[in-house]
Length: 188
Image (cartoon, rainbow, N blue to C red):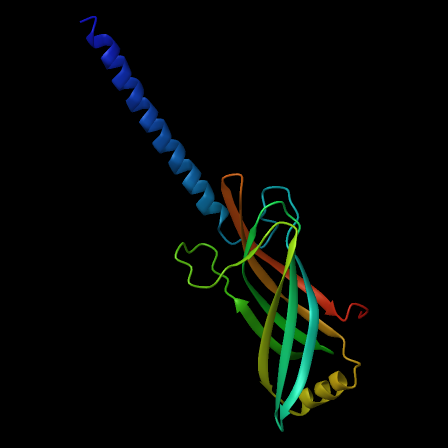
């Protein structure tokens, strides 16, 4: 009996260890899953800065009698100490409160494990450039905007939401942050 007591204690200890690992693993997985849910407030949970998004350029070219192309170039800077995955950017471009164009770069899927949309990694303290071109059909209102743009007097307002995920310290967080930017920088 004396020899079977250490074996019993070992098996019991091993079983308790397995149960603790299983319960702790489920708690970690649940926390990581809930952290990936979309939240439009500050979602970093790590007390760090968010992605710094800027418009580098907007170019509008007349390509036909009733067609224009609108090219926008974003710069996304990651001030954090770890890599952030940018899932996508949804944006709208306005001039004089009139819609010029809207579009998407990437997607907005945050929870899907089998995410089919591309993710764009932005490493620590680096900036990545994103470009998108939209073809728009012009009408009288947009022709007036086009004339303002080609005269070099346009002040663009760009708003939208960018979606991201970040992984650090064995946790994953993410969310969507709304933005509103002016281009060129001297616009009001």
